[in-house]
Length: 183
Image 1 (cartoon, rainbow, N blue to C red):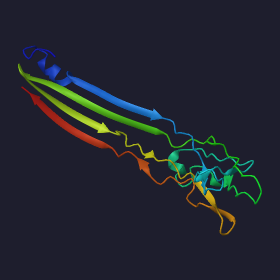
Image 2 (cartoon, helix red, strand yellow; image 1 turned 180 degrees about the vertical axis):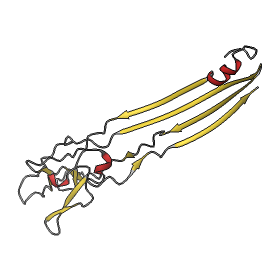
Image 3 (cartoon, one colour; image 1 turned 90 degrees about the vertical axis):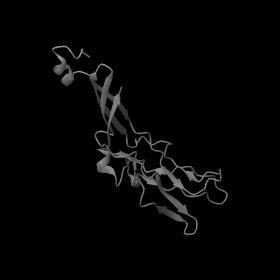
Image 4 (tube, rainbow, N blue to C red; image 1 turned 30 degrees about the horizontal axis):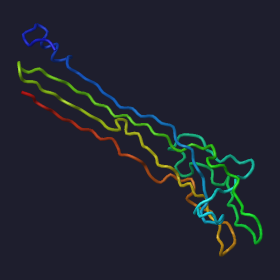
């Protein structure tokens, strides 16, 4: 900062002492592990992999906002039935991660600070901070359970909520203003 007695004191007061900071996080979505419920494999797990239907693409493309009601295609999966008496334990044909990505994450936290030199030993600071500055929604992982096998009816029961994104992560834009005087 220039000394207060300088000819450029008013110019320095106007344009000097500014400080801009940002924290930016941008991440791709993680792979989706599509499952079906019920322990029909006798290995102690409450989920197992369903089977992929040949020729159907389980992944959908487009903006996450446009796919909230069906983030992936649950009709590309069939429920793996339980073993028959004396038969081997069935395993679904879907891989652990089917190649579909979950919603990504983009967050921008910004701050702008201005320091003022008022007198020889008196300084002031103004702060403006914005968390999630652009108010970007962060969508949670969709419902990954496509259905289960009903032993009472001996048939597949499909989950009507499969592929739906029903929540968000984080928080909306938060703006905070502050000031400090040091003497």
